Length: 176
Ligand code: S3P
Image (tube, rainbow, N blue to C red; front, side):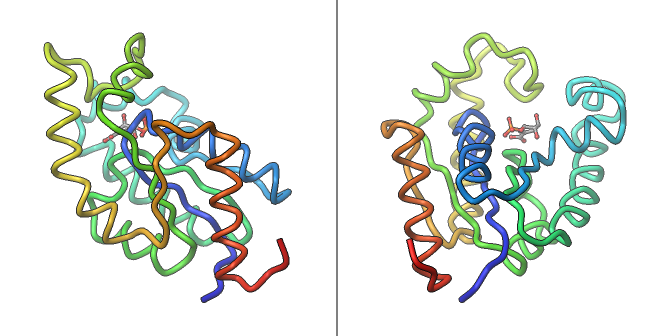
């Protein structure tokens, strides 16, 4: 199997943006973040899109953006945590790149997102319960898309990046 792109999937706070930036730097390719691209194209932030258009409106925008970004070649892409919810997105990701699932425990995600104001789905009385629900709902979807899965809760980001590069280069038959 060869893939010209690396796509990162996983729950919010799993490290997709951090790991994605480092991977792109190591591979000397551009880094994209689908949420950031949506914010740039609309001129407003994600919470504002949720406020005015609801989650459904956001998902429509997200699908269009994933469709656009998966047409690019030679990139690293960090997707939003819910990108795998739509079948069209899962197919676009699987068909066009090497998909890496960054898996992380709910406890670790709670620590990382404690002060977060940018994630509308966590604006609830009990974010831990919400995260558990999202994990249960999405874990099978992440696994169904992934070419490779790695735990980002315990390993240092540098270590995660080198493991991903090793696997990616192995499947692409490149020298490491
Ligand atoms: C979402 C995750 C967010 C963002 C939006 C919805 C989700 O992205 O797309 O708030 O459904 O899990 P991150 O995973 O980058 O936080």
